[in-house]
Structure formats: C-alpha cells, structure tokens
Length: 325
Ligand SMILES: [Zn+2]
Image 1 (cartoon, rainbow, N blue to C red):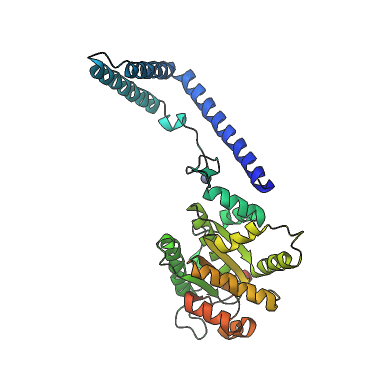
Image 2: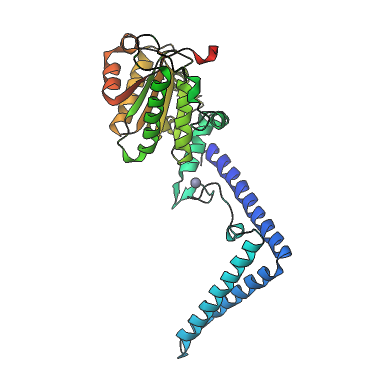
C-alpha cells in the first residue's frame, strides 16, 4: 500500500476514534442527567435478547404473539426515550457517532472501493491543495459580492460589468447544479486580471467539493511544472503516475491563469492530450485565462483553440480592476 494512503488511513482511524469517544462522552453525560434513559436502553437491550432467543425456539405456539408483544414494548420505550431527550434538548442523533463522511463512515472505503473523500484527500496531498480549503472558506458563492462590480456602462459593452457578472454567476450556478446530469458545458473564463475569475473558480470548487466531487485546482504554471517534472525527472518525481492520472480522472479539473506560464511544444501537446482525454470521457474542465481568442491561437495553436471553442462556454469578464478599488 502506498505511503500516502497509509498516512491518510491512519488519520481517518484517529478521526473515527475521536468521533466514537465524543459519542461515548455525550451518552455518559445524558445518562448522568437523565438516569431513566439508561434504564430504558438497558431494558431495550434485554428485550432484544429475549426476542432473539425466542426466535431460536420456534416450538412455542404463541411464538409470534410473544415476539410482537416484545416489539411493541420496545417501540413504546423508544418513544419514551425520544420524548425525554427532547425535554432536555437532546436528540437520538446524540447516540450515533458523527462522521465527516456519511458514505464511508470515515473508513475511506465503500464496498472495498476508495470513497470519494479518500480520493480527494489523495489529491489534496499530491497537489498540496489543502491550503485551498482555507481559501474556500473565504471565497465562495456566499461571500461573493455583486455590489463590487460597477453598474455603469463600461467601454464598448452594452451591459454594465455588474449585469454581466450576475449573468456569469448564474451560468456558474447552473454549471454546479447540472454537474451530474452531464448537460453542463465546460467553462472558459476570459478577461484581464482582477475581475474575479479566480474567485469564481474557488466558488465552483467549493460547491462541488461539498457535493462530494473530486476537484483538482491548478494554475497553468503549476500544471506545466508538474508535467515537466514528471517527464524529465520520472524516477525522483514527487508524483506517482496514479496521482498524475487523477488530472485525467477527477470530476472537475480547474486550470487557472492559462497564458501566464512558459509553454513549449511538450507542454502544449500535453495540454492538448489532457483536454482531449477529458472531453472524450465527458469529464468537466474549467479554464480561466487572460488571453483573448487571437492570443489563444497565437500561444497554443489552432488545434487547441478549436477544441476549446467548440466544447466550452466562453464567459467574458470585463470592468475595472477590483484590486485597485
Ligand atoms: Zn468517505
């Protein structure tokens, strides 16, 4: 088993232990405050045992009646317990262990296969994305402020930057909403810096991570550096081919700031391969760039440009640089 998985499973184990310990402490507290609840739990346990025993001894003619009576008694006790808890502002969920991931109960596996949460942890580790979670607390749809965009007409454009932005935001929300239906188009954000492109990339990343999707966020600079490293330095590369594979198979790949990196024929063909492979599998890509169409053709060539323009919805950001305000 690779070391990174081992390390994550160990962290998950600690997390589960902590969650179970917290659950036991809550139950102890409740038993102290409402002793009757402990009595009820013990009685239910005993009745359950009797129930099982009698199921093993099926000779008795009144067997079914007996079991039904037990079941009724148990459900009456449960009802009483629930009412008592309510009265003291507790609930039945206080008796269950609270895991971060409901799908795998923080074990990392569902039916022997890696859970989405484990996959995302591997991605975070491989791409040192964990710093992303801090950013996502600050930059998400809830903290997005449309008021920061001017309501006045801007340059040649018929719509104000604010109207344009609110259309872009609703396209992005639709992208998140329709993500599973496969109808969402890939997105291309274009426009100069300081207009909220990266912010919106973060908004989308957060929504999808919250939905349990795997997301890789990389600047074009970071992506190309990884590709170069992997090519020239394979034996010492910090990424395994499995991790590199995640770039092709994660639910959403975000490439931010395309156009700021130094490209060469190798990185260009790799970029084309990545885009192409993901499009063929209908896996979504979000690209943000400072370049306009002509500059994209100039920098990346007609082949990449055609691939992008035919399968991405282009959204143009314009207005005054927000960082100057
Ligand atoms: Zn999970």
